[in-house]
Length: 360
Image 1 (cartoon, rainbow, N blue to C red):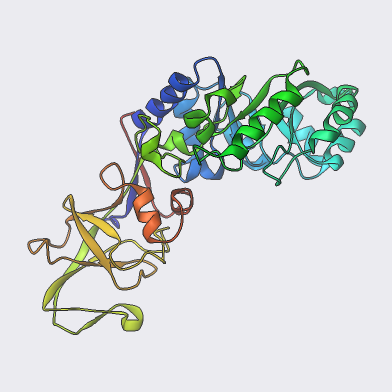
Image 2: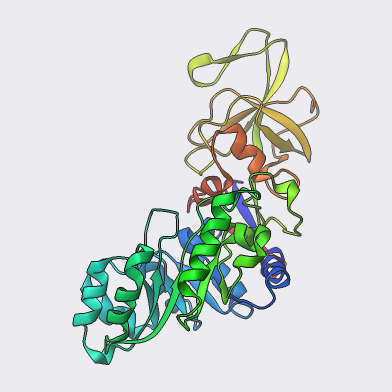
């Protein structure tokens, strides 16, 4: 018998969510964002599932791009952080990766690059995120230089939203207007919409959209119920009870003894912890499913185990199934109890948690 903790990933749900992107942005091409190990779901697996239905992939780095090529992915792959040193360029060209250009240093490296490289690039424009990108006033001169680079054969432009998860945000409207004003006459393919843009800002869809978190069945919106969508969670994080004990009133549970039993009660121990990616800061009361029914987390999260209040599940026993998040328990709800966001929880599921695929 192996340790029961595992992540079940649903290929059918992943495929469905990309089709939902197509429904919402029917005129745009799709760059599926699979960075950070496909938000914890498995980089190569997610890319193979999506390879027949997406137009391109987006990753953070050359390492992720090469991993996709090694997995047999043939679609265009955008390196969202670009390249870090000029000596990466021959490898990028060899494997037909498309770097994002956001620094003068990168532009200079392309100017000096040999014509034989034949690179396709994306130019990042800062329209308000103030993280990466060329300021709008510098873009015309920068593009003039880039178009003169013998090593560059194809140019596209992109920007990134700062607050599109807020459906009524005026700054997002300003970003859209500024980006369109700047790029409308360039004659270049453009991309602005992330998951929130796809869901809430149809005027941002343009030539390419870049779905990330929504591919994995999670809405990025601040108030998800205000924007209708048909997303299906892809990951179910599961384990099992490995012990159930009868504890006496007043007994302390776990490290620090922060939580004490208010009465005589059954306490379950499940095989999952922060060493697996379950959030250490999940507070007492965070919901967990035991036999499909909600029970509260009690005590501190340990490296490999959590403890559960089983007063509403008095018949629960060793081996009974435990779900930490999934279709019946939204990861967003768990994230709120841990003072974080669903993105972080998904990305933190570690490699010691095996992934099992359903609905292939």
